[in-house]
Image (cartoon, rainbow, N blue to C red; front, top):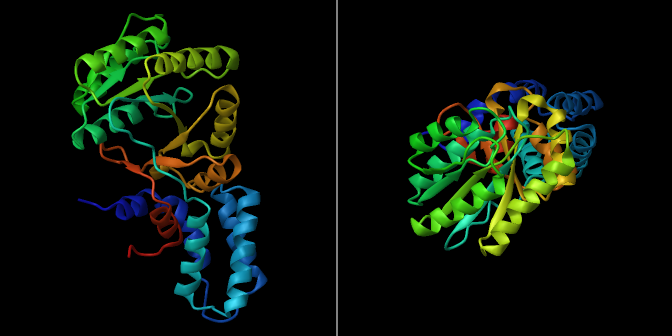
Length: 301
């Protein structure tokens, strides 16, 4: 079975190409301004963000100068350390007993797929998972979620279209308790055009969790292919409702994977999961070290 780094390397190949070409120009002699300018441009083009890219390159320039180190591999190691250092964060908290995860994000980012893959991951770990079809406004949302739940070996609670999402979540909590489940994954509507409605809906769902004394975290799903637009989406959701962590999908389909850096830096949110392929096991727990090494073309250690 492929390791996380191997999956990350394959999934990040499009993003890593331009950065790799810049790193391949290192000859072992003193690094000049042209190298650092090219590296900064490569990071910006990968959607790492101007501020983050500038700081990383400035730190690398200072470190190589201080150590007088220009060996190609050593410089790659330094760059990987600097990138990983900006991405370190805590994994998704897990507790003993029943726990809930509210999965939020705009439509089209892979929210339903992410829930299905999370369900498969946790059931494979021996947890009993129940999926709540809380997006009651999008046609066929519950049907799509049901297919994923069945594939993942999870249970499903759904209501009719147009039902109150908080009522779906409440029933899911009751069913999870009655059936001895460990985890409830709750889908939510992907609307951003009316932030007040979104905020009110999520707040109502959260009150159910509080009243039922169920620990609950909010996972925001973002699509790496959208680049800087993912940053804007994340900021909008943070304004509308509290977000605890991120799942970033479709890293394998984009040259903009540097957006992981931009989001983590600009919004100070931990990345909990990344999607590096279409398979049910291709949603992986995020590793800052694996991500950074794959990005700069370093092998797994």
